[in-house]
Length: 428
Image (cartoon, rainbow, N blue to C red):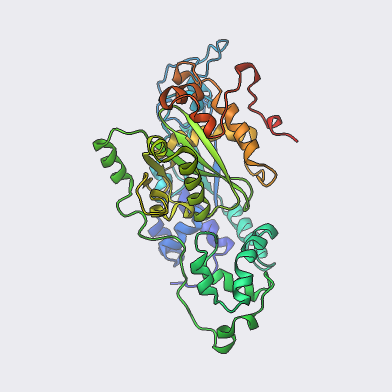
């Protein structure tokens, strides 16, 4: 069996052909003399995503769209068509549930060879040999040009590690002390130092110049045991025994690095907070929760955040520090969705669409301040929702948690006629 050899264009064409014929990954691996996991990684790494409809049906990811007879879910009185013919219904319908195709979650991870593709109006993913080859060549070229790290991110990491190392501390010691602030592994820091990314040289690492390079197991900054007792099944069991509200938590990124948003979505009323963080680290999430605890007070914090449901991102990999305060007192419960199951917190995923209307995907968040983010969320939370009987999340949140609570969180009510949900709201 071939090992440590890159896939060639002819092999990628063979994968594409065999997928089209409906062959399993095991049979494809056998035909190419490759491990099936290699084939699986290749397919998942180079998928082409298409959100297209079929046969007169537009793209619509809701599992209830077939046979749905709802109309005017978005509140547009002039519209006389069925809502399933418009993908915008996903933003407004309270019965929306994302369709998750087993072919995309499990092998073969793509729509190649699926007999239902022509009649499918859900999200589709295809493996194309030419696209995979071009992406492979591009990645190979980039990897030989240098390190893929932005200057701002390099400066941020450098400000953490340079002085302690120059004072005689080891990289390992610095890494342990600032584990929640660093977005890279210990091994990567050594690589960056060796490549001259920081104002450090190997001579500044006495043990490194004294010993020969040796193989070393890579350190992981994600706690492998953080999910124990906090899985989605544990969440369902907990909710069955405790009638409490749920807040879904996620991260909205701008560019590839730099500032990000921590979003907190109150499922019962559609209200959402967005907290600007300097980097997507575990420490920044913990600090954000500590600030909320301080601003609201312990009793109000417990009332607002009895349960948090989030994904498996590394920024949420220190659950104990999120669940407890600095004195170790319990203040909330944190649970994780299953991997590759964003539909388990679909409510927050749908509400993120409002943020993307104002800050398009891929746009950097570096230029924004927390005050501007609060302004954006004030407009979003003041926008009426049909599933709330045409009331806004702000109004329902105030009814549930008291007048003035939203203001404590930096959110104010915007008159209906003044609401702006386009980029010009924050245009400078």
